[in-house]
Image (tube, rainbow, N blue to C red):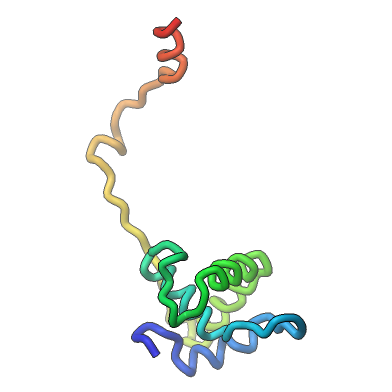
Length: 121
């Protein structure tokens, strides 16, 4: 178990909320895939860089997208928050440094593409 992998308590809250697949090829372990998805979201690395211990990266990205469309993530986040008595305040945040003149500078109202086209003509 890696440092940030799901605890047994977290897994006990999440496991009942996951879709069950009853036929076809055997599923890659959901807990392992979830840990891979969380690793990717925590690090911001590309999907292809998910460590092999979490299974195929294609499985992680496909399951992430499928569960997003099915609303599974909403149920998971709600259940985990409730299990911790609403004590979870933030899951992820990002800070992006912007050039000092980018935020409040005078906006150039001219269309740069049209200007280039007129100069070339």
